[in-house]
Image 1 (tube, rainbow, N blue to C red):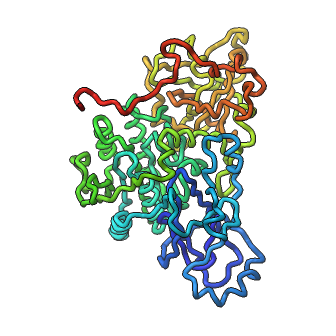
Image 2: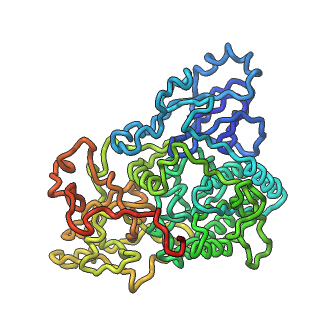
Length: 558
């Protein structure tokens, strides 16, 4: 965690300032996450004057004045002075639980880089180091975003910024940078995530609206403790299976943002800007979906990445805006950020999705200023919540036609979305069935939950529902009509759940095992009796794992 003592610093476009010329007795600490899975953060001193003041984790340090008093006369020699504090998050046990992501917060031979790294998890890099990639903001990003901020200061309308580009060019980094820069001027910024494969504040498979009042100082898997204003469970890491429902959810997210703008009119005259991150699918159906998003959101600014290697201010062919609007959007062409040959090459999109799911289910949603994780107790060792499905409005299975007699089998051991009712864009508590009504039923019979299959029914209506989070159905007790759920959501949130939705998100194998050193089975159960997984090789056609070959050419490409 970092706190400015004197002056100001800039991290990923966010400006953290001390706002005092004297030695402070109270510091505001901000959590900063900079793992090797993403470009490393750069801390830069700055003289920029900002309109907003962030309230981080306030800590009173009585001995700070005594410690800094002898050095006060030298303060004028430094542009900025910061205090760095060790942050205990629980991620220290991540290596033992999941060896595949070993040392993502550590550097090998870190002590050889600089002698001041005496804090666990803090490794300053002050010179060029092979294999290490820093998040250096391109000059084109700075210029285009600053131009937008100057224009919006004289405009009372909220700006709507959409980021467009193909995969692996830096869309998520640019959206975080735009958000942090907007927070230097506005007290709150709205953020809509439409990329279900690489989400910013939720696990994969969701689209969401977040209202942010603090800067984003970490990659997505460290920011999942921020509650969503509205979110919807798409159920997949791709939107090609039900694009109509996907657009319907985005339309509802924009309506929720406009509703939040109307609510702010009575509280403040400051507008609520909106930042929208889009998917990296820019051809075929993805091209059509992007232009549908443009029509729904009606942006004031569109940031697109140049397709020319020398970065010309020419939008790519996939970006041709042709729709009726009161004001045509300003199109900003920026330079891509796709340097190869670093640690990041080993963390592809699928790996980052797995990391996001693992991080989500192991986090503890507390009131602390930063995310806490519990990797000491594996998921299979935890006590699950029990949910009586007779209190639910129904169960939805998306994309596939599953017979009613096979429905419980398909749900067991899967990742599901927990949805609840919404009235006037606000979540409301579910209305369970009366206990006397349930008691009047014949308890000897196994009554399945109300089932909405993919063939005859549509997904839950976005205008009336929202997704509160994800859960793993650990087990099912049909005799008691109960689902046993593993989820980080607290009880007060689970009381809002009125339905369950299953998509095609795969449960990472890491979430099924107990300890890597356990070679005999899972939780004392031998491999021969562990359901859904096996360590024996399958013989015959189709026995091996499916391998995707991306180095084969079609006949037309030869």
